[in-house]
Structures are given as C-alpha cells and as structure tokens.
Image 1 (cartoon, rainbow, N blue to C red):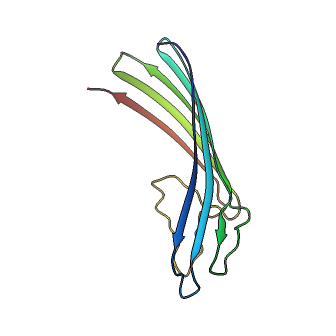
Image 2: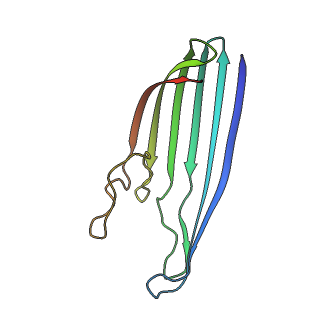
Length: 136
C-alpha cells in the first residue's frame, strides 16, 4: 500500500455539576483538536500528529476561566512491515503543559490529593516506545 493519509478530530467537552459544596452549579468546557498525517510506501510508514487541549472555561459556583491551562502534544511514528500481518514500530511523543495544565500519559501513577497540588501540573512529559503488531 502506498500513499498519504490525513485525518483529524475536533471535540468540545462540556461537563456540568449541579452543586459544588453548596456554592451552586459549575460548568466546565474545553475545546480540543487533533490532526495526523501518515505516509506509506512499500514496507515503510511514517506518521506525524499534533493535538491541542484548549483552555479550561469554567463558569458558576464562584469559578472563572483557568489561565495557562492549554496543553499540546506532538508525536512521530515509524513502522516497518515484515509481512501483511506483522509490523515493528518506534514512536516518540512530547506533551507540553501550560502552568495550570496537567495532561499526562495514561499510565502515570502520580495523582494529586486534597493536601498536595498535582505534581504533574505544568510539567512536560516525553515518551518513547517500541512495539510489534501482529494480526491473527
């Protein structure tokens, strides 16, 4: 298979809590988007992707918008197919957080508590991976 593929997604996440500790209702809105391009030629494939998490927009219960809450992620992937069913791949990704953003990889074991601020808030993360896909 050979050629270039482009894809993307836009989503608006909206949450509503009816009562926050007696302060009233709270609404949270975040706009996110993601785009990916992939090129395949012969046994080789390469892909680049970029995603953006928008600013946290809060209203109600005495809250206002959260500044510096944006986050960005960029990823690169290379794959080599040994057959139609088996591919070896390598990838790298970088998450850049604003000072009030706390986007993290899904496996991150560190979480915030009532007493301590989220340790990943404002921190930037980099990840690397190697893997193999085999379809049965």
